[in-house]
Amino acid sequence: MEAFNEYVVTMEDHVVASRNDKEIESIGFEIKMLSKDLEATKREGKKDAEKIEALIEDWRRVHLENEALTSQMFAQRSRIAAVEVKRDRDIRRASCIACRDIAAKYREFLESLKDRWESKKKKVSAEILLQEVTANIDLLAELKDGGLAVDAELARLKGMEGYCKDLVASTAVPDWSISKLDLPRVSDDSVDQVGGSSVPDDSVSS
Image (cartoon, rainbow, N blue to C red; front, side, top):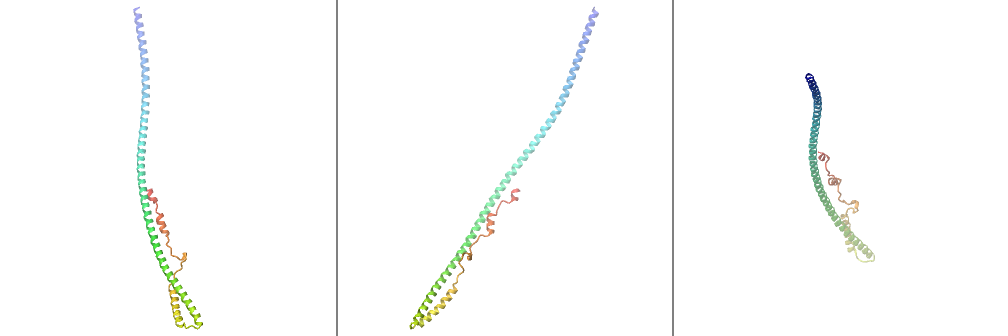
């Protein structure tokens, strides 16, 4: 009986040991699976970290490019503003020069009108005097035909008539029609100079 009990105890120990070995083997298998899962997770985590690092590097590059483009944009605006200021200054200067040129031409034109007017007055005065002398000559001729002694006066008036004719001829004035007047004109170059100043393309594109 005692031997049997020992045998039973021994068998129970074997069963317990066998059960423990299976549990240990099962736990070991689970540990191996967990290790594999952990390694796979580490590899995936490493890949994700590399992707994140690449994305961060791309973001930094894009950020630097944006800063460079922003600086270029402000520099370009400054250049455009400077070009516009210079253009406006050139237009004002060209406008002043054109206005002075036109004013000078009109002064010359008015002076020429003054000279024409003086010549016209002289011509009109000479024509009036000639008409008076001619009328007196005709009158004296009629009086002479009536028997009056007017030879001396007639000779004097005829001499004055020749003088008046010479005076009228010497005071001839130019044509006063508008088409014959030398009016000041604004040349195409002046118009181009005033209105043609613009922002050069190459200065803006640079």
